[in-house]
Length: 340
Ligand code: SF4
Image (cartoon, rainbow, N blue to C red; front, side, top):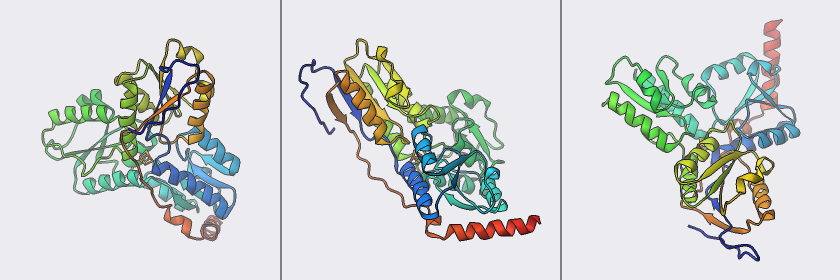
């Protein structure tokens, strides 16, 4: 544990903040956000982005101000333009649609999501039934399922295990979304193993290092906190899991907030220790805002709780090294000629 303790001046010493580390940006989010910023700088606005580049309102709004245009589908992007795929990954059909639409693409899918896609392709090729543990409707799950739709069955938590049907109970493998609760996923795997004793496990963890590290840190913090605040957006899977993990590991209360403005003063009644963390798509500026808000209300004793070190970094998408504007213009021209 790394501790940074400021001596309180007039407040009781027990009024303190336990700040979880690691927290905030992971390597995949950092890479995706920089990819949009660099594309804007390199090619100029507008740059189209399919879906929220990462699940955070503040990040999306900041990039919009710089000239990014967020769309739901590639069909909304004019031919000849550049579109970036978000960190959550896309199904192969989306790449095909972009190609047919005359778009140049930058794929900001996190390499750890790509790893799960590759596992799905490999096990499908070997004709396994793949049980993908994840949340129905989440973009990452939609993208991974698209790699092998005929082989993948979604398993949305332990209660869903009873609904699973496979062709051959001896040829089944499980994979998972990268941002799940480690504990709940293991419960689901145990339930699957009871039904399919020969169930194969993925070659390495699918729940990514960042999700695991943030959950490890919040567990330590939660055990000593009356209230845990997690900064993150409601559609951020890993942020929602942090609140759940905190509540399951000792926190008396826990809330997910996009920023300090969403904190309700009444949550602090009777509270001495506030635990604080942020999801993998949350920039530091939002945590700083919450720290300032708490300091103004007397929480000025800060202790950083860091049970694990984190040093991961990913290189930028390879497409950023090519001349995408020329490529996009040529593709758009070809498409226009084809249509004419
Ligand atoms: S949370 Fe994990 S899988 Fe998702 S972008 Fe970050 S590192 Fe990649």
